[in-house]
Image 1 (cartoon, rainbow, N blue to C red):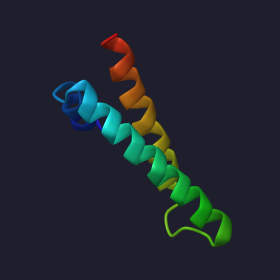
Image 2 (image 1 turned 60 degrees about the horizontal axis):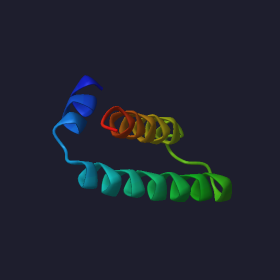
Image 3 (image 1 turned 45 degrees about the horizontal axis):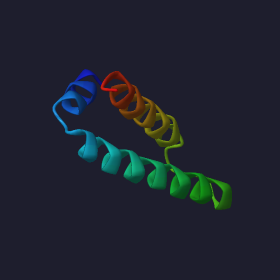
Image 4 (image 1 turned 90 degrees about the horizontal axis):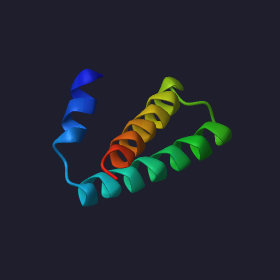
Length: 63
């Protein structure tokens, strides 16, 4: 997990915003798939939410 947050510090603001949009889209798809049928690994939803929080934290620290 540390490598993920360290990698975020090296990205530009626009790259972070793109990654944020991608993660939010991924989360929406995961939630829909989980509602229709159980996911093989439901912890992926939790990890995606945490990734979104990490990206938001990095973006806020740069403001």
